[in-house]
Length: 447
Image 1 (tube, rainbow, N blue to C red):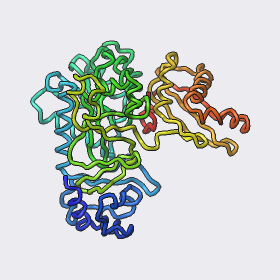
Image 2: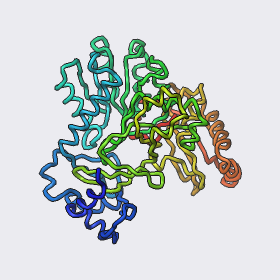
Image 3: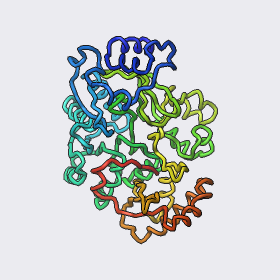
Image 4: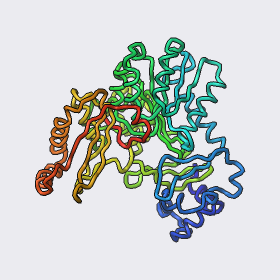
């Protein structure tokens, strides 16, 4: 990809981008690093959407959809052309063949995502219907959307008609699905798999879900790709990249050496068609599409990893199987709780909840900052597989204890701040995970 040629082309043929450069006094940028960073706020929400495509570009537009994010001024809309979806369909089919052998097993694919204008749900639903209609192997689809109860009824009703069930949903919905299927032991014997979208999840969460659904802990039950309505797909997990992440989970010292954390990011094989940079820890994408992007900040935190960096550090058999170029995603740049100036990382907190074995943690928690008498307090809602209201005080005390051991800064300030405020600054509520959680987007899904 000639990124400079794309830059010159977009500058000349996309009215909004020409205005964008003019407004920032960057029309004459000669060096790549001098080209300004594009964001939703300073570009997509600032200029008319019809001006973000090339002249006469609407002639190629086959789909108008929205990204899942919202701003104070409304949704960000995206225009797509048929070529984008054809490439996407082929990539998804190949991945499902490799990981789940859909061409060799009688398969029911259930799509449990938000539909409507959201491109993610809409595109996957259309792709699965198209795929099932075109292939010469036994593939069937059902599209219950976010009615997970209906999805569970479909699986129970047709459990004897299919060899496997591929359930496409958000990662945070998998715990709810388990609660709906857990009484049917036959469905927990290695028949259900979950390609998931939209959220970071930890390797611990993947292993927990595998065991709950009757698979071996290292089976690829949970699988994901990386991309968005904004950029299209940028990376896909493979058996090999998942194997690398599992290796890092078992070798925390090496994980810290590469990623400066005990929690390995999601590791994916790079897909072609985009130029990717890491700027201040954020994934920045340049890609030619109906709405072309030049140095677009995704607001996702990540790094780029090349196979050669791992030589001699991991087993030779694992090294040889890896793709040459990988993208590693930690989640949203904002995935931390800021407690009176102290950054507490979400993955570490979720991992702590998993360590409380008696809690039966579902893998989903939420945290909300509330003002009580003008004082900032932090309310954690922890979702579990069963009712655990009697463990709230225990969970809160252990959480504070953990955060003190995790962060010296937190340890230094928590007791004095609590004494000064004369109220609890951290509170925990435990709820059994239910269908209602599927109706909202979880910000935090960690383990």
